[in-house]
Length: 98
Image (cartoon, rainbow, N blue to C red):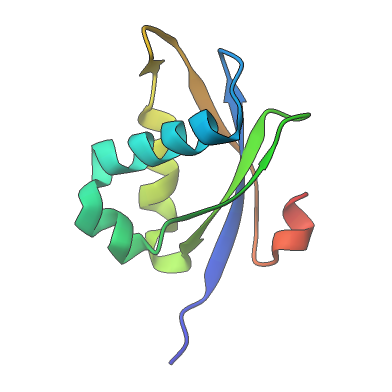
């Protein structure tokens, strides 16, 4: 049976970031708490970056949604400064998060 997916719009509060550093920040947050095996079980994937909103879109399975949200919320420090990752929207369609 096919797994359902969820797309999360995650706002980045803190230092200015480009697409490469935003991707690194989000991956670091998830891998730090869940590890590689946990991120793989959750089906975590980086999908898109929006520089205007300072936000990223990530994808995960519905079964791993709570773990991914917790991992993103737990990230507080990055490159010597404070950072906050806030989940702004969750949807089953990527077009609905933007």
